[in-house]
Image (tube, rainbow over all chains, first blue to last red):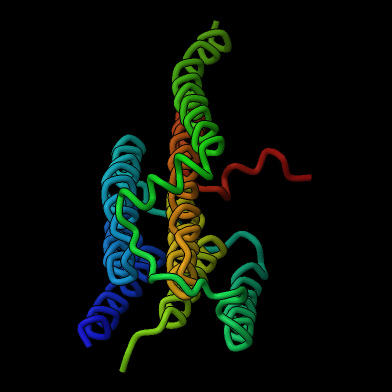
Length: 174
Length: 101
């Protein structure tokens, strides 16, 4: 019963946030809508007993990633209004048709089967830090280490992108 | 009335379709990027719901890895957007049409 109420309330929040993100003219409103959606999804993680993932969702997505987005919006500036007119003549109707077709495809696929595979007869999952840690550091140790490498490379790449543009400009100017 | 994992997957599908719409309809690179994040989140919700349905933790581990990769992707993508903005003074993908034939 509690889960149904939570699902309805936060489902509406998630949908409202998503639509706001796509619809809003101001990128700051878009970011706020996305943040609302991400918080709602964190609530869904909790109702699916994925507690660790829910905490990570709030810390990384709603915290770090959205802060990064807001910083970039601040750097770029929001005063330049996006023109809503479309340069390509058939882009809008084509896009809407594709969205509708894609949604219909998802619905059809969902009516066939939401999940395939064998249901594990053991206890229901409980995504505590201990359980996730046991999985990560036993079965998924190598992928875990590779993601660490990936993060280092991404950070170095971002710094390189931010650092070397000025040098190139200076060379062009000179 | 109990909430089955299928409900969560249906909601995730709707969120995914909204994200697709954002990519197809918007011209602001930042908003398009946020739409990608929304699609990633929708898929994460599907993973968690499927893991609950099948009683396995693999779904949550998959979400963990998707989040790490998405964080790396956000860092590099936003750096590229800022670098492009420094040169062109715009974040609109319509004005970045150097490669058109």
